[in-house]
Image (cartoon, rainbow, N blue to C red; front, side, top):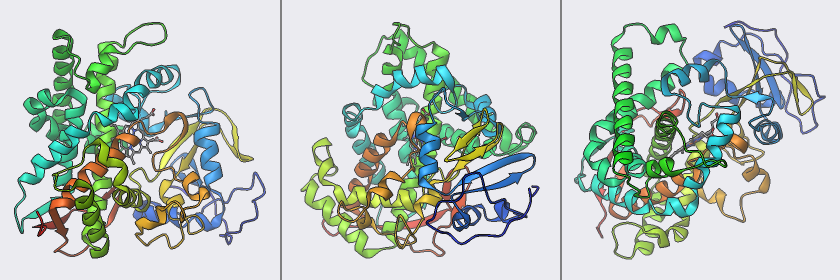
Length: 459
Ligand code: HEM
């Protein structure tokens, strides 16, 4: 790492900073040692700060208005910022050119074709798969059994994802191995995306395992596409929908594009969801009052049924708030870059061509001016009368604009189904120290932790 130059830290003020004057951070070794603390401690320096890593210059946005401008006002597919750059080009070589990694006209076309597949009504049709998969998994729990997180939730989320992408029937045939491979591939892509390309090609055991998992995943997806095409199946799953989709000229996607979209959805959707659900269960397990309210809501709404159906979802309001609060406290995507393709101004500040504007849901979600007492886990801060418009407008945990997360409604629905199904039947308690710590990798993963399951008296 090399420092650009040094600058005094200025106290945070509500007065707007003179456009064009961007604090430069001096020696920044803590960026590598404690990156989460580093980004979170820059807020008081102003709405935007500059630092360097190697030969690259980064502009960290500490301000919701600048983040909005980056993602929404100037975030279109033909705008001045791109996801292309150091990390993404490397990730694209591993996972192909799906929604998460493509840009420009291709991304625009694909997004228009895929968006309808993630509408609320379509996602509601996956609720039964989400519930039944959760029930099957918790069926295997026994009183006092120690559960390992995030692995326990990783198997569940990967099985749900496979079931919704390729249909529950096919998922049962292949899910065990696919589940393992998707997780290995998703974690590996996240890790390797941050390493120099040469290091990922060294013949190390970790690299070999990752390559093997990724190539098995590619092979299974090819097989799924071939099977679905051969049988002309339309089961309402995502794969059938991708095969049936047509652009505005009536043209379908090529098999390679469908393949890349499936990989993008699986790899992009998995670890974020696993991380968010793991943090949520950890927070619930550590707070008897939150646990009690979650359980009470689940048994009241379910009224003796083992898990929710679509009609129950609007009533599981506290459950949704608990998950939203976990997304605030520990946003999986905590630091995300965009590269300027040309000299461009953000809120009057010049971002030179080739440098990176970086937005951080973590910094915004922990801003005390938006979320008072930000280190407190408080699901009720999301009650309609309590949350401010400024805070909801600044909530970029799912990004925003043309690159907004495609799976936000999917994971919100999935989380409510999973949490209510578990809370109705099992109480989870953390019986080991220490509590999980955030590990700022590609996603903000919790360190491994264990919870113990106890059946609810009414179960
Ligand atoms: C808690 C769970 C999740 C979180 C917090 C999350 C967050 C995000 C964020 C921040 C982005 C934008 C990344 C950037 O700005 O560079 C994104 C993109 C994306 N997400 Fe998610 N995500 C989650 C779950 C999912 C799921 C379950 C799916 C699919 C089933 C999914 C599919 C995608 C796709 C396809 C993109 C790329 C969209 C595009 O560029 O057009 N995500 N997600």
